Image (cartoon, rainbow, N blue to C red; front, side, top):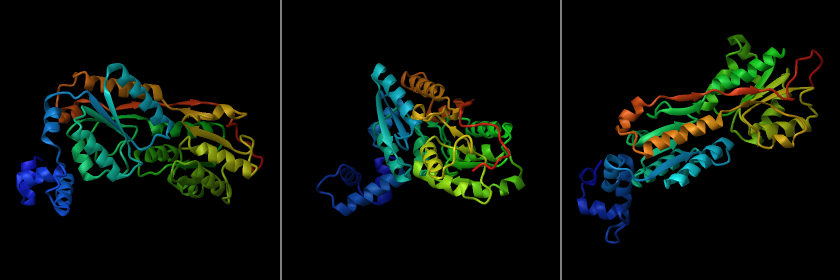
Length: 344
């Protein structure tokens, strides 16, 4: 999409569209707004930036993530920023809060700034404009995969990780196991839930409905979900947490209900709990391969920024393999063998 094509679509002169996009005072506000909306709709990028994307490197790259409260995203972003500082690269960071409009606007601004590549953790419902823009640059999906995004993936084998946690509890003799996980609209939430459910037959899954709760990865949700699970007619003897953010809420709720871990309930957390060292016990956790993923992200950016990837974005999509990293189980004090005594 060029400025001339945009002008033809709008039935305006080339100069009018150019002035509208640059906020010229001689152009009416209504015309400016219509031009800006059309530019967004058709994915217009200033020609100078598009030329740079095609023919040179800018020394800048973008990182688009949902938030900076997630420990994983903090670790990866810090590592990438350190590498950028060493090599005099410019890193442009955007926080989307999983809002598709914010995601698109961040991507568009980065493209206009002529970034050489982008690492993105996509939202659950990226806009069609986002999907199209990503095909114009060297983009990599981080942690999350969206089927509409044409870009290779660097992620954790979430299905295997939760399956490992569930299998550990089954090995200890637990058969009634609960699960608290994040939205299945995101690939991470979907894969983790499938990793839990794959250990139970269809009939067994139906019997677990009252001890499976899906919601936002927040301590407050973990607190409420735990209380609902443990107040079920047949509460579980063990629990899998699909995010480390649930741990605080779950432990507070357990204390409020006078449920002792692991005496009354065995618990496995997915991912490192930063404040775990403050507890009297060591949580059983699924350790995520954060360093391996961070190194993979840095390597990918290094290849892009150093000009080692000479092929087009479309060729990049088809020549770059997905990288899926394997988590591992770290047994702790929060799980133990099932006993036939009443759990709580």
